[in-house]
Length: 273
Ligand SMILES: [Zn+2]
Image 1 (spheres, rainbow, N blue to C red):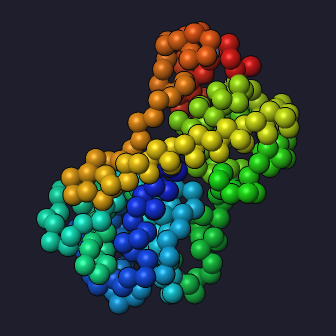
Image 2 (cartoon, protein in one colour):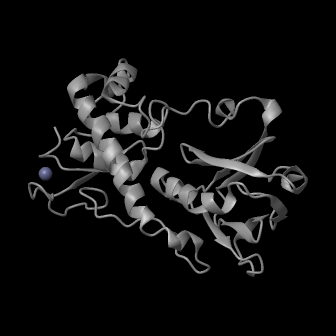
């Protein structure tokens, strides 16, 4: 599943091919993904120039003067920039032709989304899907103090509070496990029991794991744009994620796997207290 780093690397990959260019055609090969495609999307976009791109959580934002196109990659979505005469494959459901290239979205499981938010509906941050999102983990507002302040009264485990996305957005299952390991915090501890000092450490490790993943993804950027490119999801070497029973890279204790909120959590019972 694409996580925040994949979405950010995708944004950086497609941005130079979109920004400042005008949409010349839109092709839909399905009625929709998770939700139906917006009615008359072609009429809405053709002839309009893309001003900039952005990201909020795992939503890729394509800004025009008259509104914003929101793209979510869902479970299996993938964007590529291709020559416009490239034949579509089975799961290529959405094309936006921009100048002499086409932005093509493939999404085999169709849990992704392509939505339109017109400027006259208000600022994009107030969009129904965006307004409940927590702060961006790579922005200055996010720090240990922020985590500490917003977890007072939260009795759920720190792992589940991170995944909930209402305090900080985009820390998915992999990065929650990895950042908690690096901060030496046991994922089962109730969020309100963790003190400021440990939250300062956790905010730092969250930033680190995400920044490293984005950097690593940057080196595989061409895959996003290649005709036969791979999905582009990053294969990092993890400390704990998916390493059940394997020795901890620090202390050799076997990595433990538990289930929290129906998601697997991986941790070292010795290093993480
Ligand atoms: Zn360990």
